[in-house]
Length: 369
Image (cartoon, rainbow, N blue to C red; front, side, top):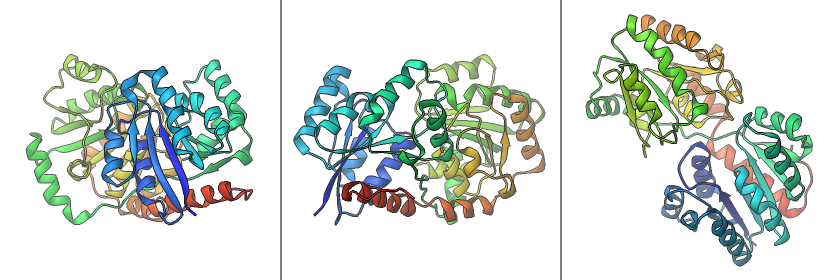
């Protein structure tokens, strides 16, 4: 007997969590599980990719929030999933009780520490938590945030680390040359990259402030941003105001990030808060030296003994010093960072752990260790 697994995301746009969802949808053992995807908003990039992988997927995002919620309930009632896996606070709020009332096991994802939450967000999460059979966090930091703030019980939260696919390093040279030529970046420039959707938490402002200090002393330095813009062009406007238009490249969403990583010499992620960021792990898999803030789940992934650098959040001076050090000393690859990903953050391990947890829930077995 195959169990129907319905994954519901708040957005059908592509971010780190959505890429993990795609890996999970495509990798679940089809002899045991029958996966499907439902998204409540966005432009449909996620559902399109899921369909290309042979997974049934629909996006009700064009309907408006109230109608989307009604359609989501109708869909759950129609397909009668055995387990509903929810991503996003908005999704949790409107569908936890619905999925439980319709007879499904309910799993809720914890993807970040979410320090922005106000009292009403916390109260909403606590109130609907009674309908959740299991929470799955992608970091220990995410789990701990729910223990002290939402006051969930530790035995209701399992930790499943993100999984990353290791790239073929033999393609680095060709991809590097092609990407730099395409985007007008000198082949001999030291290229620093921040790959993250444009959101205030990701630290683009901090990165620009730090870069403006460093480029005065290291004029051959270049900075590249890539991701979906959820800040209405603010990052681009700041680049212009600072007179950095020739030194900073601003790209949108990249379907294939491998050419971008191959073109970089240094990766930075100066986030204000995080869960377990995929792009940091992807950069590590490319053996790139990495500078990131010591927040959320980042210290669980990036270790200084492997070649990483951890700095405080919202500290452009510290970021500038670290960037200047790498640009002056000359960047070199860090094989230990790739080895870290290979050992502890594989896609197959992430999928197998989900399968174990799903099976325990559906078979009525207790305990998540």
